[in-house]
Image (cartoon, rainbow, N blue to C red; front, side, top):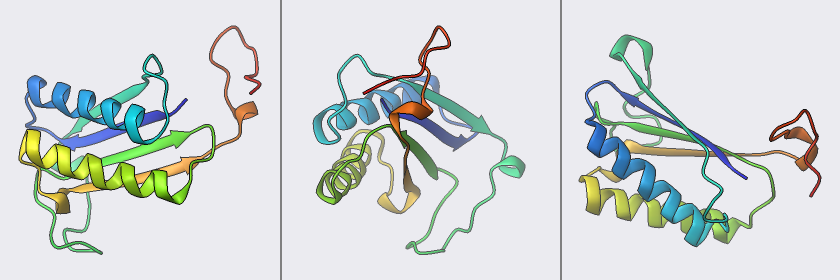
Length: 126
């Protein structure tokens, strides 16, 4: 039950955003143990003045094509699942969108099941 906030700078085409979204979901299903129907994403495209980042902090250099993925996950994943997700996603985005691996930052945050309500005002129970 992850929710991913995808943040990019203005200038991405709708087709490229769709490829980014589809690739992310494909990798989450394959590597992060997400059910195929569990797809919740928010895509934000921001002006350069509203998406500020250090171009070199712990990176080989970020460009204007920098992508930030903030994944809020409702159940724990192993370090190996996280590592595979980072690696496979980076590789596929490089192949499909020519996205430099230095332009991809992924943050995973863990939550507990009771911190989710999917609808009806009901707390989710695992």
